[in-house]
Structure formats: C-alpha cells, structure tokens
Image (cartoon, rainbow, N blue to C red):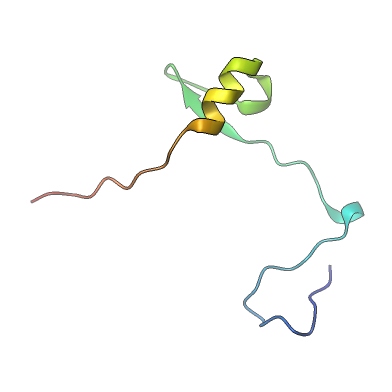
Length: 59
C-alpha cells in the first residue's frame, strides 16, 4: 500500500490493483438480507437508483 507524498495523512490510501479484493455488498430487500451480486439485472438497476436519506428525529 502506498500513499502519495502530496496527500495529507488523513486521506485514504491508494491500493495497487494486485492489493485490491472484491467487496461484497449486502442490502435488505423484501425483509431479507441478500448480496447485491445475486440480484437479477432489474433488481440491480433498482438498487443503483436508490437514494439515501437522513431521517431526523422530531421532538
């Protein structure tokens, strides 16, 4: 792993291709937790279109 000298120490390190590993993403769909990679093409498209929101507490 190498960090370019121009980056501050708090930045994310840059990995070479041989140092990378596949990250499995899971999400909750229809009450079940499933890996996104197992979704069919349509469901993967729906997952990509999802928007994240921040539900603030009221009170």
